[in-house]
Image (cartoon, rainbow, N blue to C red; front, side, top):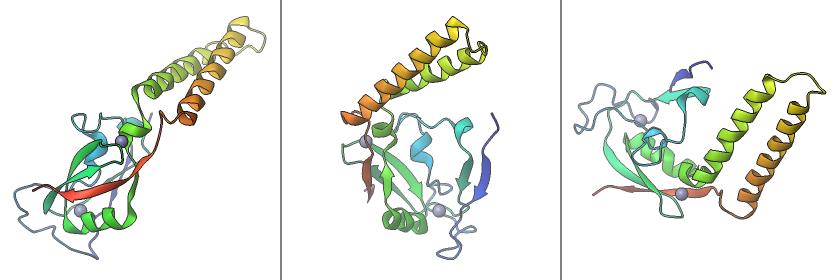
Length: 162
Ligand SMILES: [Zn+2]
Ligand SMILES: [Zn+2]
């Protein structure tokens, strides 16, 4: 598994606060809510992401990002990023998209696929058994989507922490 590519996502054209003092909040971190295990469950494994973005501006304020189902996480961002989040809308709440059941199924699927790799022969009965299991897991994941256990949760609302 390769590490994510780091891309500069500083919106210089909106606001350049790279040399600003900030409000003592540190660096703008527009994607922090997805990775903070305290607030959003830390559902995103960095190793599985292709890109990682960062912003060089100093943060201006702290905001709550709240999903339609009440999950919320804090982001500490520059005003330009707050504006971008409001305009683009965050459609996916990580907690809604990855409830515990979905995470367990996802893990079982990965384990099953790893086992499959150890049984490459087409007529290996163990292989047939694993394929049935994989199919069953896919079915359970579809069921979670159909019954609304897995949902998008968006759009997330951004509101300044007072
Ligand atoms: Zn920013
Ligand atoms: Zn949610």
